[in-house]
Structure formats: structure tokens, C-alpha cells
Length: 287
Image 1 (cartoon, rainbow, N blue to C red):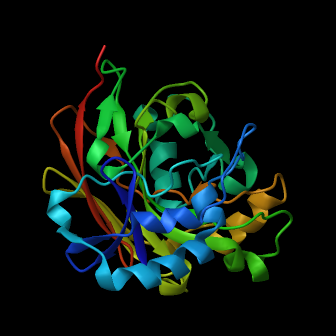
Image 2: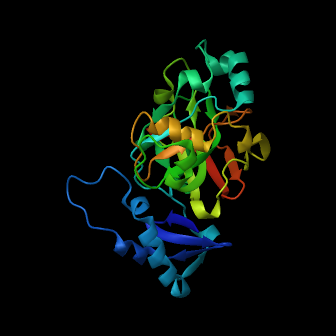
């Protein structure tokens, strides 16, 4: 099932080129009071929501996909965990290009570990990227994004995929510089998730998916997730050995070689096999 959020927080199911409004399925979610849960309530209750969606679909109002504004499919990720230099060719290009490494020591992911991005950086495809620090290089990085479906702590590789709610496309936007990654990648709008959440049952094998991104019609990155140094099960095992992953947490699995700059006015077109395609406009952040 392809589940999306659109408009003013409405819930939809994507079938073909149409979005079916199933917002009333949210009625099955438990009510919350302060202090609110530190996880995404919809993702935590996804099986119940899906049951309600199935009952609603036959009579749901459909709208052409081109007429809706798609939000991030995860509204409240508690944390975004990102994997740096997780494709060998990208590791080599970063090591060789001072414009990418800025003199920082670049090591393999097993040594450097992971980093966190601020949840305030998350937007959907229709919201676009609003660049800051225009005097510096701002790059695109396309990645498979994994959405965790239930609490995961010290999970084994063998069981890891049982903890996945679904997948989406992730754009890990980056300001180049010498600062820590978490700072340079956590600007508002610098984590684009979309276009929707493909539930895990529709994508049982995330380890052999083509992914690509073009800018203004020119292909920049093109690879396959089989080239990941740490694949999805390994990333879940590694991450959950340090802290508990919660429903709605997102793991950005890393980007392949071909990263490049974007500027206001550019249009990014990202796709992942089995997930979908999203078009994201680049503009300048308002003052």
C-alpha cells in the first residue's frame, strides 16, 4: 500500500495516478494528552489504520495525483539517523574532492559511524527545498529512507526487516563545509521525504533497488542499493545497538556517487524502484 499525506494534513492512498482520501481512518488513532508520545502515532498504529483504510477505499473520493500537494509521509519522526559514505564510489569521490571533504578526515562508515539530523528539517516533495548559505555549495544526495514501525533495541540482522513499517525516497540536502554533518544537514527543508510511504509488505527486498536523481533533466546520481556498504538490515542492527529506534524514526541509508550542487530555480527529480518518483523544486529561504 502507498500511503501519503497531502493538503492540510489529509491521509491518502495512492493507486495509479489518483489519490484516495481516507482521512477518516485517522479516527482509529488513540487520543493523546500532554506529555505527548515521543514517536509518530500513525506509524505506531499502522496495522489498525490499514484495516480502517481497507474498509473505506471503496467509497473514498479520488483526486488526480497532479492536483494534490504531497507532504512528508511521516509527520513526526522522533529522530532521523543518517549513514555517511555508505557507497564505496561515493566514499572515493569524497576522499578525492576537497570541495566535498573540506580537509576533514573521511573514513569508512564502520569507523565514522552514523549521525543525526534534526526532525525540524523534514518536508514533503511539494514543499520543496529552501536553500540557505548561498555563498557555499549546497548539494543533493538521494537515498533510500527506511521508516521504523515498532520499538527496536539490540535487533539482530536476521530480524531487522521485521521492524520496518515502510520505505520512501529521502533527499539528504547538504551544505558543504568543515562543520559536523549534523549541523550542515539539519537546516530547515534539508530532509525531503516522499512522495509517499510504501509499506514493507510491498517491498520485501530493499537490497536491490535502482535509485537515481536528475537536476534540470540531467542525471546526476544513478546506482543500486545492492552497492550499499552497510545494507538495510545491517544499519538497523548497528543503529539499534546504540539506542532504541521508535515508530516513525527514519534511517537514511546513504547516497551513491555523483553528488552535486543545486541552486535556486533548479528542479530535482528523484526516483527509487518500487517506491516511486518525486519532483522537488529548489528556492531561496525567506528572510
